[in-house]
Length: 343
Image (cartoon, rainbow, N blue to C red; front, side, top):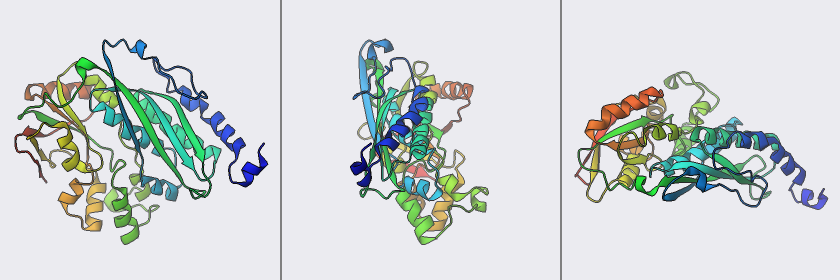
């Protein structure tokens, strides 16, 4: 026991207790290739077991952002770990890579083992949804850097894809159809604007239910975890020729869709072709935010987009229906060089 370290604000014993509490959560994320390495200096994964001819590793890292401020206010910590995983795995998925492992980084003002367990439970839940292994992580107790009730969580993901199956947008052509997969809500983007509009300016109550949100507590709606699209896309890969994909994160349609296109290409998207979660209209109405700005910040109800040949649309939607995934034809690729939205 280190009394001087405890006096400085770091409790080593709490750290050991946190590790003990999270072991079962880590264990349920194990997949083929994951090696027992929790507690070692580095997490290990046996790539040879994936049986790829020319494996290419695709990596991504991200955090949850100021959505965490909502979790602090609601004292609800079991879902933001899913967000941390989702923001990373959805990104590597865009290039056709299946996520294989994930590592998390958690910085806290005070190590509270039960809270750490809830956070890592969320990470493990996300890894199970993404069919990837949680092979390591770090919890840093940092008094004076963070308020004792605050923390930050971020993650790092690696995916793998056979080189011949790598998606780089080179196959996308004008006339390709855009199929959108619905989001669960705001996901983990734009929360600085969300908090300003709803909490600072309008002074709404996170613990109150609002009619415009179908009677749900505002805080719970905002904490709805980011959807993970791994199982849906893995169900399609190898069965249909996906030309390109885009994860609709911060920057909305205007910033993210062009990232899958070739020079000079654009898209035409109709936002009336799918049902939109009420939270988006609630934010826009409360903050008097123009629709164009909403579409440049939020996903507006579509979290992931695929470009496919028009002859493959029916097959894609049928395959997704088999596993209970909703999908919508929302537009097409053009040669306009711009993102043209209809609402």
